[in-house]
Amino acid sequence: MALKDYSDEFRADAVALYEPTPGATYKSIAADLGINRATLREWVLRDRERRGISAAPASARRAEARTEGAAPSAGPDERVRQLEARVGRARGERTEAGNRAGHPP
Image (cartoon, rainbow, N blue to C red):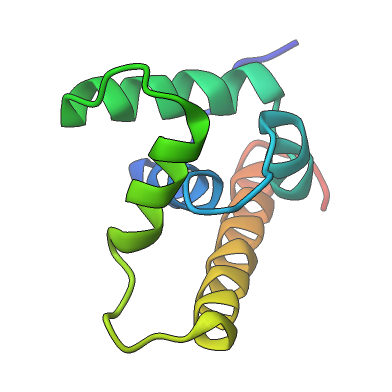
């Protein structure tokens, strides 16, 4: 299997999608994005290390992530809209990367 080259933006969006999603699993988010579960896990762990976040309980990480990057006045519906837009961009980027690699969508 060939290694895939994902942009930094795609990786950041994948991590940002995983972190604030209550009840999310690596498996479910990775499946939504069409990537391997272990790949997403590695990106999340590297991002946490980069930010100096220890291996805190998942509930604490998710609570912290919900407050990071969200507009202060963004309600739940707006946050869902923002995340859905990010997933759409990430899927489009994945399709473009596949096309560049010679793989049809």
